[in-house]
Image (cartoon, rainbow, N blue to C red; front, side, top):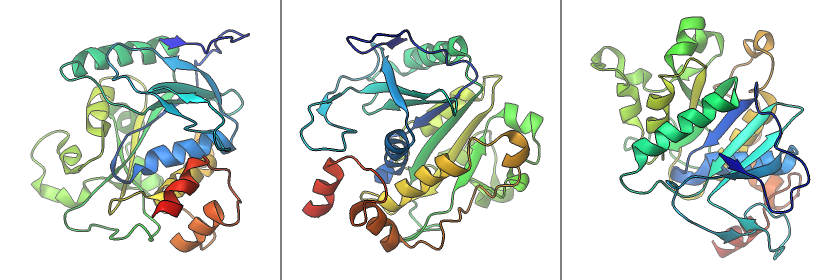
Length: 280
């Protein structure tokens, strides 16, 4: 359930028909970085906190504040919403208590059904022991996809139509079991668990994955930010015209993205990111 911030003067908005976006705490933190940029720059409002006895406690300061020492608390699970784009973001910054995974899955499923979301989008990143596709965070990543049964039943040519490679395509004829592609994920947070859970739902669920070499992947995060801004929330007829796997970033390089974020101030960022960059 969602608990509103103290002092809220309006009721919770109706989330029915909106897209639920869930970033995973994964290698490189690119999905969290991307969704944080999306929240700050695209006008999503914090409507409350996702209350659960199964999410580990945690507290930090100014997680999304663009100025230093503003004193805004960041809790382990927060919900943001944009009524005009019909996007809901569920940002979970901690983990699930040991032994409580199935209880949390049941709770999350009930929340999704009750809220009436039109579809679910999970964002994550993964390491590769063989440096597959990307061996440096300076490189612009390609996005890979994985979808639940509902998507494939209604759009059997989903990957071809969207210019998107299926994550795990390299398994080819060696695939022997359902969800084997998800076994290829490494340090991808809750992505595998969530997609297996969402495969049981009768609404579309999409997983997007990028490879990272580790560290803090600001380049990958910026790519996810642009993906959310420009590709994801078009109507279905125009969405087919987009090539989701490789984004057109106006010939930007990894160095160019760092300049946009930390030198030119073209994009609003949380203030503490500058401290991270200056430290390293």
